[in-house]
Amino acid sequence: MTTILELKNINKRFGRVVALENLNLELRAGEVLGLVGQNGSGKSTLMKILAGLQGPDSGEILLRGELVKIRSAAMATSLGIGMVHQEQSLIPNLTVAENIFIDKPNEATRGGIYRWKALYAAAREQLEKIGVNIRPEALVEELSFAARQQVELAKVLAIEELVDHPPIILFDEPTSVLNPDEIKILFREIERLRSRASIVFISHRLDEILEISDRVIVLTNGVKVADEQVATLDRDELYRLMVGHEREVKQRQPLESTKPAPASPRLKIRKLTDGNKFKNLDLDVAKGEIVGLVGVQGSGAEELCRTIFGAEDSVTGHIVLDDAPALSLSPRDAVKNGIAYLPSNRRLEGMLAGRTLIQNMVVTYGLEYGRSAFLVDYRAEETAASQWMSRLKVKATSGRDRIERLSGGNQQKVVLGKWLMSKKLKLLLLDHPSRGLDPGARDDLFDAIREQARQGMSIIFVADTSEEALELADRVMVLRDGEFTASYDLRQGVMPSQEDIVRAMV
Image (cartoon, rainbow, N blue to C red):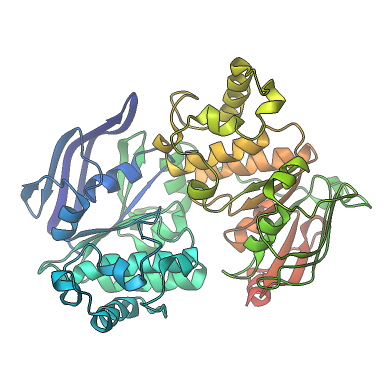
């Protein structure tokens, strides 16, 4: 099989952090190359180098046998390299059509004059490639996160029209916000592209890697530790190669050893309605209980969490926490009531770019560690933040690192640690908490959530998958069109099948 892309001895450092070390890699014609590794292993750095967003410190890149230096994203595009970003690159206040062709020459925009009818038609053709019905004239900011991801894919696939040789398509966690049907569409498109493109595919979902890839490369701390044909691997072996040890399968405790839920729940929700995404919802959550919410995109699960945290307007109904009214007028009120919220889009809503890890972790609850209007006990703050960084296994050189230098999964751990630092927290709301985490980090996160529940915290989380909900939750609630359609109390031995949950979801 012909080698299309070859990397020789690629090195990249960020200060004292080694992102890539003497990395050698080959990508072959018509191949889907899976790329896996723990958070901070160098996967995204490698993709950014290939996409022209960063340059290597040393090493060579050969494209179809010729030495190239990819100095910019525009240059990468001209060479036929496109990337579907984990953190989306779309411009919110432009239309879908403008975003698709913003970095590509097109007859509809020649000379700086926009021929809108032709531009929309060209964009519609790209969107039809992946079978989605998104209006080319719609503003990106009006779209859901999943729809934006589909536009991102259409934007990259438009590279096919620019080059007379097979392109290289880089997928950086493309499925993290897609539902099962949307993932099937994406995989169908990848299968179509095999005959006319070479593909690098990053995912933390090992089952996806094994399903779609021909070969898989495993990175650990910027070093390639394995290069294997997928046909020779199973999920357990791939997990071991990535994490360095066998996966410990945690079995749910038998019914006899579980504690019954208290007669009086800690959280009571009655007739909660936002007039748009959900209506007349009733929900009780006990002290120390983990409730998992599952539903397709737009089911209302995410909006329910945001509403409990006071981040949605025009809400009616009742929320009572420890017998006190807790229908928050704002997130500030929710924090005062002992409610925390981990948003699905951590980078935009959960962290302070340009600040250190310690600054991010103490920004909400600094007063609990000696901070006042005039004095700051920096040592107390740093000690507490460092303890939580250790407990959550955040990979960083120190708490003084700037948060944007961390991988997405490690950023996510810091944002979670910001909330867990509080000594007064009662209710933790987690919107897709495992999104962007590698399997090992996901297991660590689930252990931390279980520990918080054992200490009495009430937890509601929106699950990425029904399997995730069944693994972590004490009770699973299914939402469809803003209403609860099923409830399964796993503590009472009620274990639904996947078909039961899917039927309730759709």
